[in-house]
Amino acid sequence: MKLQPDRLDGVNAIAAHDAQGIIVNARRWTSSVVVPGQGEVRGWDCAAFEALTPAHFEALLADTPEIVLVGTGARQRFVPPQLLRPLIERRIGVECMDTVAACRTYNVLVSERRRVTAVLLLG
Image 1 (cartoon, rainbow, N blue to C red):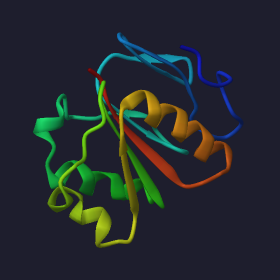
Image 2: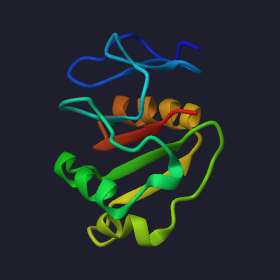
Image 3: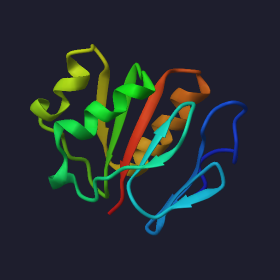
């Protein structure tokens, strides 16, 4: 399903999402991915929701987000607060939703020039 224009000036844009992957800035990702509003889009070394650790969220601090969207795969799941401690302690907002909803929400927030980072699990 196509979500937004292929590219917004100066920001990373999620163009599409399907069962095989996510397209960001015309590149297809077939595994978990970190999409900051600006800066390098990169793979996320977490393949499954059950494998999440505080270190996964600590690594997101380098993007200096004001909000982190966690795309939890095909269905919405909530990340336990103890895993989110690195973000919570720095007063960074966190929203958990299924990955399709996270992709849509990310594009809205980035188009508003918000400092958002999306971490997207597939499956």
